[in-house]
Length: 474
Image (cartoon, rainbow, N blue to C red):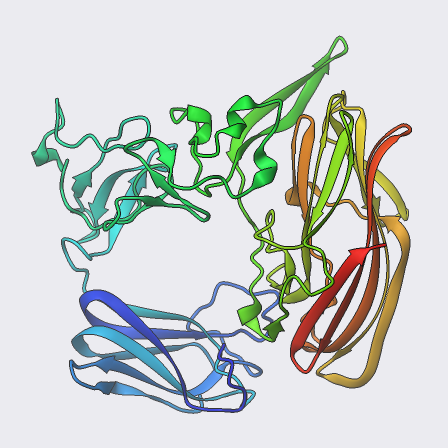
């Protein structure tokens, strides 16, 4: 969706990696029920948000040209434009109007043509259990597809090439143009480094090119975690790290026998599942603010420590005020909570139990002696665009609010989790137009009379398409 409301035309340009011969371009626009989307088809119609008038164009080498039959008006559904084959290096869709006469909502553009051959063609990437590309198969004609390249690697990702029983006639050392190489990473042909979400991996030395940016990954119980450049605990035969952050054990309770509990554990790479993205609308406030501390902490020597961080990349979310994609656009404040105990282990998170209005003990380790608590109380008022005269107000009394398992990680005596309190999301009542709210949080790491505790207050506001959040200790 463009960011120039009520202004047309807008356009979406797609540059190919070389010249392509195409004869069909499909244009997929936004569905009416965008919060519950279904797989789009060319028979699907819309009435609220889709684009109704547009031109499908290609680059002829010196100028943009509309394809034959490519000027579409009064469109009420997804569109397919067919034309005589053309060869071009890029295409674009020029939007002249939409159903709401405000925004250009283009979800997907597909270009179809005769399959090419060699580098740049449509190929199938065949991967092994670690996500390393082992072969590329072309897509010429059904029943005649062949392997065009093969790859084998040493433990840390160095490619073996045509040595031993590996022959060039089998596809080893073939140049295929595929960036997906070892362990779910993507190879940069210029630097030779493998890209992940947070840093770059140098497979010749088996080390990261920069230290682990997540400081909470260091643990006294795991001495190797203090090597900030180590790749997957120096065990690449069994593990991969496609994110560039720490790895951790994900344990599930399998059963018990004669008083002993059995767990199945897998070492998993830690990565974000929510991406704060202020470019989705509005303006992200500067972070930190003048009087908004970057973090708040509590510490008792040789017992426990607790830290709430409001700035930086955070765990799973971008800390600080901004927008997120958690179930539709949500404005809010991202923060990360991490804690460590000297001994005893993290036993449970006290999550909310909405039907009963109480605490639902979420046990992560039946032998752990420490509990993680987060309590919250709040009040707010909200307006939405389709109900301009209706005030939506509410509040919550003090209640448990520790995160569910999808937003946290526990590793023995330490934990980390993400939270993103926000004013609301786009609903049938329309997107947010004005909001103000106040939150009081109380985070505890507690065992009997021992506890580390951080209390803080959050104020949020949204007006004139600008969101801000302020926070501090209380």
